[in-house]
Structure formats: structure tokens, C-alpha cells
Length: 160
Image 1 (cartoon, one colour):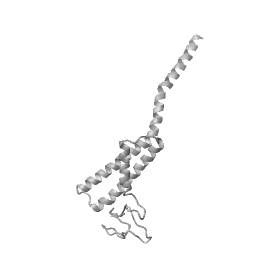
Image 2 (cartoon, helix red, strand yellow):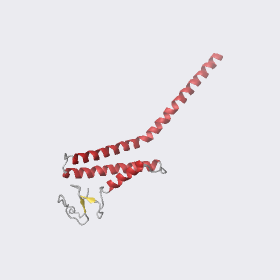
Image 3 (spheres, rainbow, N blue to C red):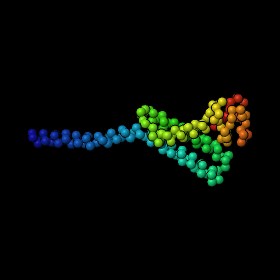
Image 4 (tube, rainbow, N blue to C red):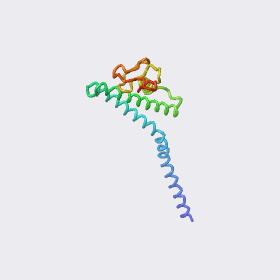
């Protein structure tokens, strides 16, 4: 009977050892699952920043004409602002008591810069031509650069 009792105790100890060894790995998987959206958003933000840098470099080196550069730049800034807003919303939902650091300041600077070129409502001073990206004023009927009609038949401004 003592041999059978020894085998049962050995099996119980082996199962307990496996559970104790595997427990930290299980907790790490749960932590990684919660970090995936933030990691994805941060990677998308870096890609958007790289796109903006590439566009600026291509424009400065003469590879892109200003007519092509403006709308692409406006669109890239709007995408970057959207990603930054998603990161802010995610961080706010995860930790409401986080202290601002340098990254938060950079994110807010980019968001405010991109918000200036994001779609604006009629009457807003920060509106742009949807074709060339040139800033327009509320009283403009036509783009100052490309001449496009900013007030189509519906009477609303066309903005990027």
C-alpha cells in the first residue's frame, strides 16, 4: 500500500509543479492581449509619421509638385490625427490617472497641428480646398490657387 500511496503523492506533486511553472506564462499572455491594440496603434502612428516625413522630403527634393503634394499632405495629416485621437481614447480608457510625459506632449502637438487641417465645418477659419489643399477663407467662393468652386450647388463649402 505504501508504494501506491507514493505513486499518488508523486503524481499530485508533478501536477502541482506543472501548474506552478505554467502560471506566470498564462499571466503574461493575458497582459500581452491587452497591449496588442496599443502596440498596433503606436505602429500605425509611426507609419503615418514616416509617410509625412517622406512626403516632405519628396516635395523638398523636387520629386513631388506642389499641386500633388498639398492634397497628399492634408490627407496624411488627417490620418495621423485620427490615429493620435484613437491612441488618446485608448489611453484614457485604460488609465485615467496617467501623468503626462514627453510622448503625450508630442501626441497632443501633432493632434493639434492635424486638427487644423482636418475637415472643418462651414464658418471655420481653418478650412482647405479639397483639390489642392490651399487654405481658404469663409468668404471665398473659389480657391485662391487652383480656382476650384468652393460653393457647389448645395451652397456648402467643399473642404478637405
